[in-house]
Length: 207
Image (cartoon, rainbow, N blue to C red; front, side, top):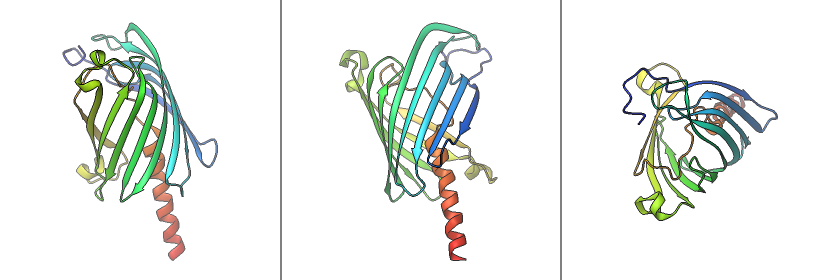
């Protein structure tokens, strides 16, 4: 219904506020039109130490389904979703992630993913999601799975930038296991920033 609309659209329009309450805790609040299908408010907190291979995050979203054609109007479906996320850097540039919580259809379950980042900045990953929806409701073997690809914008433009272009190829486009597609989640931003700080710190140490 969204992709078949030929009128001008506003895929995303948000305000985001980032903060660092302590040396190891980071926070984000995002409000507005979060993605093409949902608008509302998203809040996130992340605990991550620069010298630790693991991190823990919590995210809560209160969202309402957007109208198919009118960019600033909404439909009557509203839901609160929430996730607790665990991240672990396995070495060799592999990162594992486990998300446990409530998804957009009100179903509850977990998503596990594994991502590898290459020297040129490209990230390729795979994920699988299982929730408490019945096999008939979920379809496709009762769980979702797919692959993700993230490419740094600087790789194509040649200009310094931390922005990335990302896409997801999934076997399903149904309700089960669906998350709000909020831009600017904390883990990648914090990990990239901490990596730069550690690199600079070692440079000063060796000099």
